[in-house]
Length: 190
Image 1 (cartoon, rainbow, N blue to C red):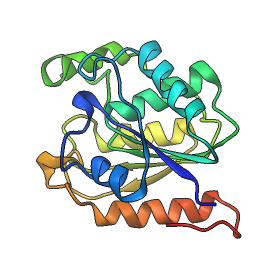
Image 2 (image 1 turned 180 degrees about the vertical axis):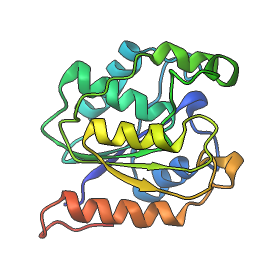
Image 3 (image 1 turned 30 degrees about the vertical axis):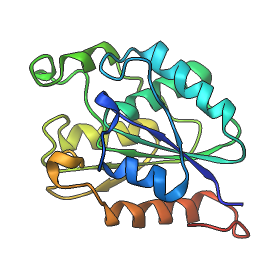
Image 4 (image 1 turned 135 degrees about the vertical axis):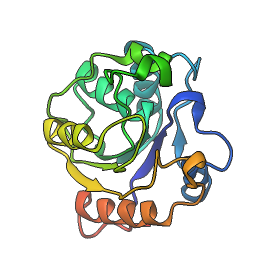
């Protein structure tokens, strides 16, 4: 059976038209709805992710964007992962410790400090060369610390609606490659 996707949005909940919303509909993915999508905290957001994981049957692949990436990383540190999580696609991680984050997205600062321990499952970090919320070198350092594969996406902004990523066909290719790498050969994939 194909692993179920668990979509972990960032600030504001990845609104209509965002590639995460499209994937939710296209793949019948579970959605992590935070009580307050504009005020992240490591414990509360990780707890909600943990609830969704517990309620979603079968093998799982987590798909985080922006502050959703931070949620996944905090969840892995707080809960130690889960035996059904086969991997995580971590797109456009946001850096809560970036010098100008208090001006860019002050709510994200509550997610600091960011855990930099190896993740207990395979992961792929996809980051842009010109994302205002994380420098490419910092994103690559995150990937190294998490023992994740690093995929530079070029100069594509924050990989969200504002940067022209409603549909994100390149992301679907990466998802397919990740599913192929993280699941046994007899599993049906997207």
